[in-house]
Image (tube, rainbow, N blue to C red; front, top):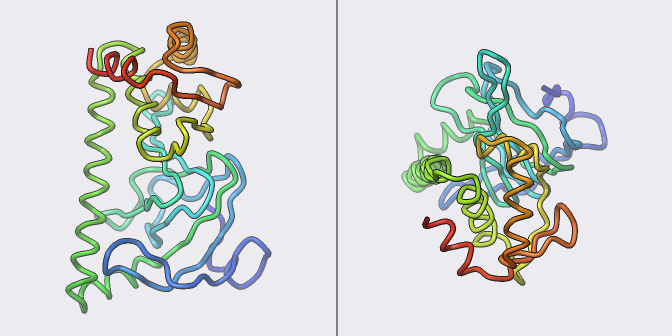
Length: 223
C-alpha cells in the first residue's frame, strides 16, 4: 500500500479534504488521494487504519483463494464507502479499477466520534448495515443458476444506481465482471453477445451498454 502518512505531507496526488460524509451523522475531516488504474489501495492483512469514500472512478475489493484465484467481492463507485472492518486488519485487498480519487478518514476518528456522539454512532451502524446489504445482494446474484441470469442481474444493479438515460459506461473489464460473478471471461462475453442479439441491450463498444428492453433483462434475472 502507498505510504499514506507521507503522501499527506508531500506529493501532488493528495491534499487535505473538506469534511467527508461517510453516512448520516458521520461527517469527519479526511484526506483526498488519487490512485492510478490497477494501483493497490490496501492489501489483505494490512492494518485497517482508514475508511474510504469513492469520489470519482471505481474500486474493486478482492480476495485470493489458496490456489491463487482472484475473487472480486464488490465494486465501489462514486459515493460508496469501503474499507470498514470489524477487526484491526483488512480482510480484503482493494485496487483502483480505473483512475480514482478517494477521500480517506482515519478509523480512530470514526471510533472516537461514535463513542462521543449518538448521531455518529447511528451513522456508523447505518454504514455497516449498507455493507451487509451489499454483501447480501452479491450473494443473491451468485445464487442465479445461469450465466445469463447473473450478467442480467449485474447490469440491472448498475442501471438502477447509475444510469441516467438507460446507458452505462462500465469502468470494469470483462475479466473483472467474470471474477465478480464467478464465471469465465468467455462465458461473460457470450452472455453480453446473446443479450445484444436478443435486443435486450446494445453494445456500441465493449464498455458502453445501452439498455433497450428492461423487461427482457428482468425476465432473465427472475428466471
